[in-house]
Image (cartoon, rainbow, N blue to C red; front, side, top):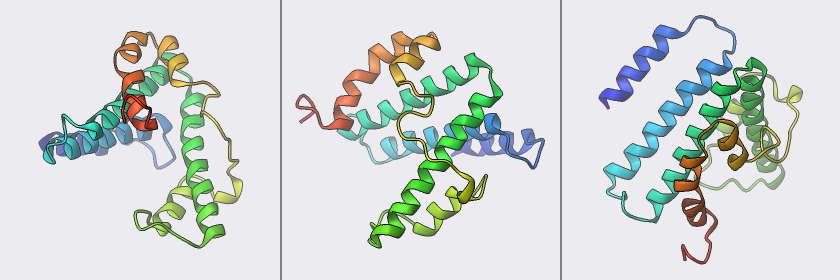
Length: 167
């Protein structure tokens, strides 16, 4: 909780525009999300189970993505990452509208807000596949952290995908 509060203070202190700042937004969003995952795994005492492996895979993917974006140093790439996230929210929103059957774990209003937070959803193009037309393995190579990928990602991905070894 202390780290979360310090992070929030730093987030507020470093905001320097009311416009979308993809780098600021992504870095702090990733940090808050990572803290949330760590908290859920440790507070619920799940750190040795299958769910902890799924959380670890997510944390590694967040790390690799941030390292890749930082290493590339391209402002347009940070925006592309944000736009892809907005488009994914739009896609979910459209599918919820189409089906009319909203699962209990989804807040439909929040999904619509996320889809429209940076641009009106009508102006968002939905891209399928990876946000950089790549994959996490390739990003880890380009970000010079393939050893992290090799050490943690493949085994934990098996848990996410329900591979036979995980089952």
